[in-house]
Image (tube, rainbow, N blue to C red):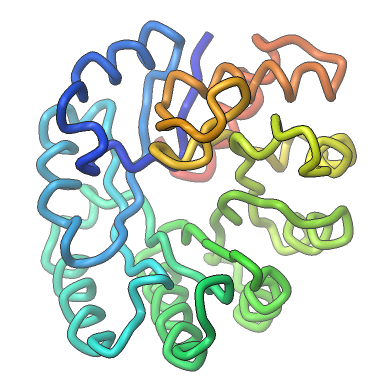
Length: 258
């Protein structure tokens, strides 16, 4: 089987003591490629250092996470922009992660929205997919993408946890739905929603080290656990893990043009 983890933070300190072993476990589980979304200026160096170790496996993306939009946003966004535009564009595979997060606080909503719009503009300018974080802000994220709808604008609504109507809105504008460990949570309800989403619109992700699937919930997540997500999806779709891997990997390859 050939999996692609479309969203994993393998460069973070949580993996410093066993990164090589953890990556090998993922490869042994069938995960052949790893897409690395950035968080803020503090993670750029570690992200690109990991990507440089094996450019055929690790694919860097550049962006400013909405939870990092704070008092110093104007400084942070300049660093992100400089990083994005000074690099050879063939070395960047996505813009993000970006988006909106109303869960932790709503102090910087306007700045988050401005930040999101900048990332959308860059994604269209550079013809790259945009990776969207939408915690407690899914409707606003969908609305902003709808307003910017363009033949070049594409991407993933990462860590999707919405309803069927929201999923339909997302797929109607040509975006993919990123499904991770939440699919395995007993009372998430995501299984009922995923049942109604055509696999041609779905990509798999782990968001490691966060949101580990059952039976690892509450522990550090890692990319090898994508098989648990695929197993759950296969059960929901009355399909096989092999088929889930084939379809979702093809979707990721098409989106990222690899």
